[in-house]
Picture 1 (cartoon, rainbow over the protein chains, first blue to last red):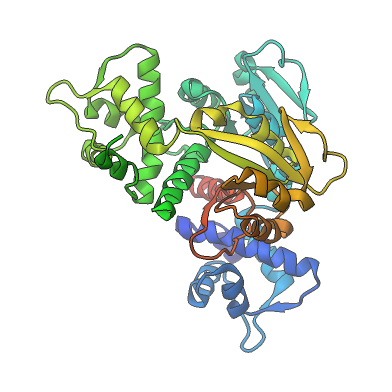
Picture 2: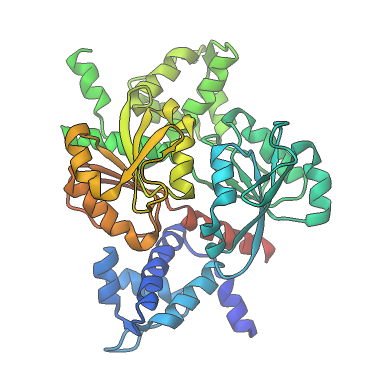
Length: 217
Length: 217
């Protein structure tokens, strides 16, 4: 990997672009599975309902350009997207809070296809501490800081009850973790430099309910 | 419930406002648990890192206004938010695709606190059909249409593999379901009038990876 390539990989994209890239990836992965060699931006546009010009612009961030009249080479578009999105590198993570959602994430081997490797779970409940969930060991949350000194994991997945969200985040940050994937509906506060991604499934429920009312009118 | 109230409940909000309302709710639920009677928008602002003026604007959509020098009455703010967001009404849903994520949602009783009641699962795998997951029966996907004629459920939760996403969506829509909660990274196409909410956890992973690189620079 040369310097230019390295710099490209570190381009900071606008969030809407980052949200569209996995759509392109899931589509070209399907095409690649079907041994399709080329795909035009018109085809992608039709399939994903995103304007061709937007697709070309998004992919130009990755320095991927289609060929006139042929389009994009499917396999290299796929690997280019995976490479850029970080899905083909390993990222270790811990799950804090091994309730039903935390356990599901520990058992979901689909996440490995996106580069996420859950190496440990942490909890306060005596009945799960010392157990394995989906092949992943669960430790006492009181051991997080000591455990982290040896393992130096960057990503903490927060699937604790909402009232423990900030406390779990503080603990993860104090232990040296730098990225929090927050599944609680709580709005976590963190110092600058800490990455927070909020996946609040309840907010999406509110959107569904609200939009359903719109159509009922 | 009078006409005015009814119309208020059916106000269509901008998506960023709908995303913030559950943050307010989770915070005031905590305050309510601690028997706090009043909260000012300054307090909410400090706690959630949203500007006071934005909070006042968001809550004005719900016709909720604070009192000068006292602020918002915690309990009525909580019930007002729950009522508006639809979290205290029952919404039946089915899960299509009972893999690890689908099963987790069927077992996650937390969703009930947000008004979502999962009444059935559907799958193609012979080993789960006829079983119960988290107390919810799993049926053959081939029976969806017949089952739906009796049950008339509006919401389908799609937790199928990405290559089956469109097919599952088409089936749900053909059966008369009007809202799709799509957990796959596939961009589903649907006729106008069908509500789609995308919860693509993989897109959030891409955002985490990208932002982590930013801080490493």
